[in-house]
Length: 135
View 1 (cartoon, rainbow, N blue to C red):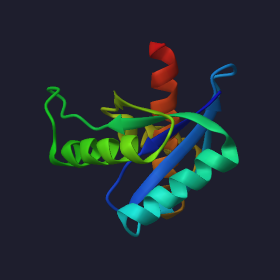
View 2 (view 1 turned 90 degrees about the horizontal axis):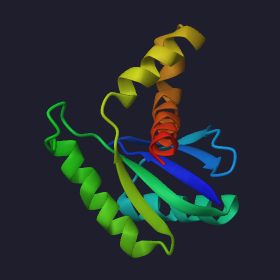
View 3 (view 1 turned 90 degrees about the vertical axis):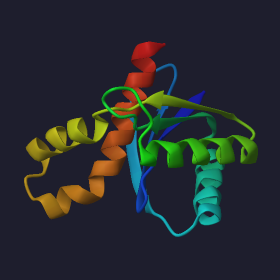
């Protein structure tokens, strides 16, 4: 089975994929968001093309564990997606994944403008690694 991780953002969504057997996440191209239904179409396309069996969505909680404004938006997206796809959808805490992704990419891609487009998908890789670490 393959697992798709989503790093939800207001402007972009990052994606990563891995098989549960190998547990080695691969970043995918990010999605420049248009609207909720276009996002859903894109995710359904990934599910079909990549034979995805489960989706993991990162929940960006505040450091004290409380729900931030964006976390509430992610929770709404999670509930929407659960109703619209026929596979399992799960949320996991993703505090500091964007910071960690930025630190990793700084080493690989020194130019901020060039690494900005990879940040969301690297965050999705980290979300997927966290999911596998907790399993």
